[in-house]
Amino acid sequence: MFGDYSLGDLGSIFVMQGFAGLILFSVYVLMALGLAIIFGQMGVINMAHGEFMILGAYVTWMTSNFFQAYLPSLFSGYFFLAMILAFVASGALGMLVEWVLIRHLYKRPLDTLLATWGLSLMLQQAYRSVFGAREVGVELPQWMLGSLHVTDSIEVPINGVFVMCLTVLITIGVAYVMYKSRWGRQVRAVVQNRIMAGAVGINTEKVDRYTFGLGCGIAGVAGSAFTMIGSTGPTSGQLYIVDTFLVVVFGGAASLVGTIASAFSISQTQSTLEFFMSGSMAKVLTLLAVVGILMLRPQGLFALKVRK
Image 1 (cartoon, one colour):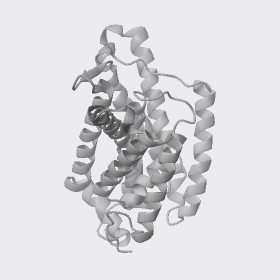
Image 2 (image 1 turned 45 degrees about the horizontal axis):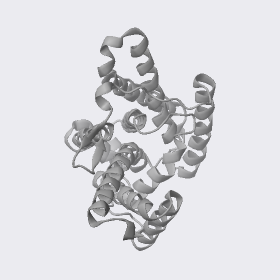
Image 3 (image 1 turned 180 degrees about the horizontal axis):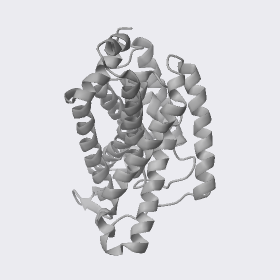
């Protein structure tokens, strides 16, 4: 297989595959951060997480169309506003869903799985009715197009670099909120011991609602990033939901470091294997490797000690 390539060509190919893995890693992290917060704090298996991501993608698409039609002179900066609107829209819908549905199902994870799976189907149909069944693409600003020439044989897309930078900033922001802010301390207190947290005056219901909204809002931002690497359709979120759950479980629920390490391991393994075999086989082998490791370490790479 390698006879047709020189060592330099092989090196360039592996660098390009590694960068492709970093872009996939960025999407996984943005998706998994919100899911890890929701699953880790409340034990809610949110099967509609992908649909919250796609809501953010559709908001980005609508913002792009609005700027093209009415504010073409400001089009180059529309994406930053689109990310904010995507966060607000997905977060607000998440808080509404928590108040209407999820709060009645705490401590019943299988019921949350079934309920959010039904919600997923409802949201898919809603998107299909409002936006149509066909996939749509977002027009990117001119400065996001093209590639950066690292060497004569290695090029990296500018929008991929932007997605990675965005992921780093959001991860730092989430880490600060969860570990340095007063609200983050309340969230971690509820994770550690919900009854005791309520006894010392923490409004656990309010913490749950805002936490669910934050997780869904981050998924909305992931949807904005998703528009730069793929087209948006009513069922596009389902392409990532299984991989996202895999990242969360493999990394350890409620562990930010575990989520990042898991996303990096899975994305790089999958991207590298795709050079040697088909994409579906690479995904299967990656899944088998993760399952094998989980059999040896069922709590994941990094597990928090939780007191009931």
